[in-house]
Length: 368
Image (cartoon, rainbow, N blue to C red; front, side, top):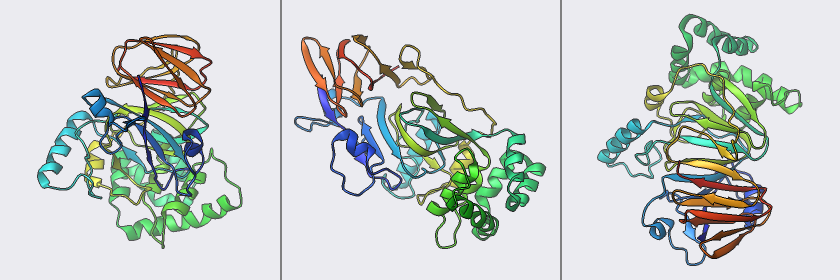
């Protein structure tokens, strides 16, 4: 059992206070977006005492990656590939000789990225496509999108999405500028609530539409389900399901991968061919995930996430990362013990770990 130190990602959309306060880091004025705990090469955790890379300590990679996010500005609209698609895409890009850190590289590794998120605050996101009737209602409420409404009525979801993603930028601007002018004014006057998709669309105009060029990802917001999670509620992102995080803090557990195919609200590369190949054109109702005796159930094989409460013994079948974001707790393993303060994390390889204290923010990530 060893204390470990993760890697902070200073993404533009991150907050300025939550992660520095949690981790006891200096507030430098730069945004703190994510905190990674795992063995992904783009964010390798190390031991706290001598900075040994976690993969060296374990003599292997972990199949899961644990993160904490602080979302101040909306993230890109995105989806993740399945395993077969990731392997094929990675192999193709490796053969092309494109560096893994190239700005237009899509497949950074050969793994899929099933992903569980659990809200640590009120958390807003969009996930999946609404029903046809709900899409039509959203478009009808915004007369600037009349052309899109008519196209959707005649052609359905799949062709409509391809239409907005391949539309010439001049046409995107012509459709979205009048909408942006109206809803930005309402947003600035405080006339929109977070339950109204125009609230988030207005934020997207302000954040991502620059110098008269409108981000086409704004169209997608009117096609997708708007969701608000309360602390402790979870949601699972399956391969091919479009989603975007809008605001709040969460903890995430996923297969070890950084493969993201983006669909807008970003300055990063968008590969429309890959996006249209992978996306699931299905209407769905987002499903909340609630813990069963602390465990958040998902179909993923690479990971499981547990919110532990009370004193007791945790039985493990493989390596696990314990992350404490609440009151101090003590972990005991094979005769040794460690105190976890707020923000501390440990890696353990033993089968039995005893928890003592009053845990109100102790999470355990391990294989499923």
